[in-house]
Length: 342
Image 1 (cartoon, helix red, strand yellow):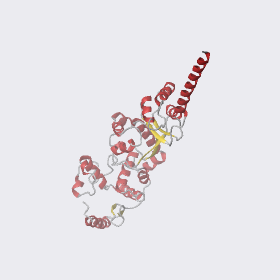
Image 2 (cartoon, rainbow, N blue to C red; image 1 turned 45 degrees about the vertical axis):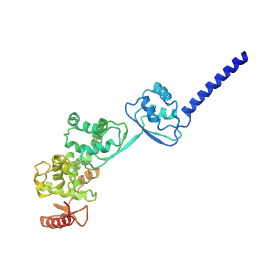
Image 3 (cartoon, helix red, strand yellow; image 1 turned 120 degrees about the vertical axis):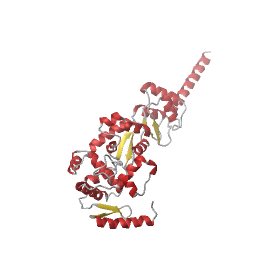
């Protein structure tokens, strides 16, 4: 009798040990065969996390149980971007997500035409969606607190590559933009703006025109210098991109506008620099950091006029007087007519 009891106990011990060993293998054994990136949304619970990790682990059995144990110990899983290294066990994977904030992501945006474009680009790089970003930007409390309106807020954004945690909210993104704007507009740059007789908003507005006229970085300081000359002399800027901006505000379906006609120059808008002296009230796009720098460090020249060059596509022919300009203009009109550009 004692012999059978002993055997029964032995069987139970072996069974328990086997189960424990199997579970330990499921928990501690290698479960990830190659580096994998997972994104854990804000507000995820242990069940949501299990659903995400099911696609990563090669040992999904008991994952729900292990996640419950981790939740009991650490609380809710952290949201964010997590790179699960090859060779990681379920335990290492769960512990990493429950105890780490995750990794930073690179968020890059450059010159953009509209706030909607900015929101679209940024939302593809962080958790916040484009609608929440747009709503946060348009929030009247945010605009008022930072001294912007829906048009001048374009000058807030300084394009570059920044590092954020993936689970950044729309408001956190904007708060960072405010800090980066203040950092960019340091004492040195403000002094340069003041020497031009401008505020940071006006510099960004001019930079938006400069970049709309030319994307050639080596030409931007020259274009900026030309416009500074016109401003100082009280000459209308007569910038086609400002007219295009004015048109698209009321007729967005006309985008893209490849050619400005004389009838377009009559549009009644504060952004029409063929009718209004000085700078428009706000930027016509979000200019790149390079365009802002080119404007602050504009070329001191005597140019007053410019016209797209038919000889160097993408560049301009510059002129110091009207007769030179008219010659350049006639050459360009012949060129676009020969290509039937409408």
